[in-house]
Image (cartoon, rainbow, N blue to C red; front, side):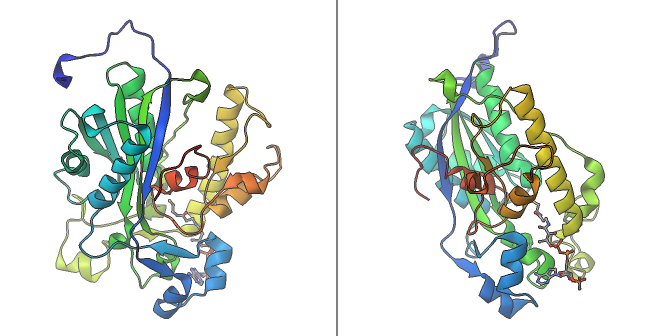
Length: 315
Ligand SMILES: CC(C)(COP(=O)(O)OP(=O)(O)OC[C@H]1O[C@@H](n2cnc3c(N)ncnc32)[C@H](O)[C@@H]1OP(=O)(O)O)[C@@H](O)C(=O)NCCC(=O)NCCS
């Protein structure tokens, strides 16, 4: 099919869209809290209490983001019963692309053999996967494409400073992918989304060097500026406030109240604090999914989703 010849009909109504399948992949090597105790001044108890993370997966030196993404994409396609030839669009949310260019999306497109697809990388840091799903959803909802792949993939260990205890305990490597297709069952469609950006918070979570502002140099390397720098407390406060605010907004505008709404997906601590009763409904903690082994992988959302999918793919 020639993608360049098919444009959306401006008069055509948006169609309902579903997530057809989920594929996840983490590299086999694991970095445990007790191993981190040997590297920085920290403890298993501190990490577990503050983050809920016991271990994180770390890619081998010769493995890059596209390798993880390709594996997750293959698993997602298998789960959906589609082939690479059926994929017409793919988007990769990543902060650690293999290279600035070609894009990781291009490498994945070639790697899986999606010869009818176009696509691009989406840079939204921790939000990369959720933004990617929304983007893929629009492509399918508009009627322009039938099947799309939304992927979140990162090798965060390449930009983590293993001398910095405030960040190295949080992040890990992994990939998650979903196939997005027209909804077969209207009950199982993607209902809605709510995203926001607030660029004023940028200084609280950033990688200072390596871009056009501060290109790589001996000085930037010496000053360890090619790693994640984070004001953890500021990020945490913002995440907790926004999580409850946005969830409340999206549930309200869709008329959803317990028991129709049954689960949510966050890091453990965000979940615990975001759903404190206050004016929000009490959320049974056991239904607030979190994960202790995929760690702060930027695309960790799909790992958490795995608990909720009726037929999860392996990975
Ligand atoms: C990072 C985070 C776990 C730190 O927890 P916190 O309770 O905010 O901890 P603080 O940064 O206030 O530090 C408290 C103390 O613990 C220390 N500390 C920080 N990291 C530590 C570690 N790994 N081990 C032991 N102590 C540590 C600090 O130095 C500080 O010590 P001090 O009181 O003597 O100065 C928490 O802020 C967080 O989860 N932030 C969100 C991070 C996130 O999700 N980022 C990714 C977005 S996708």
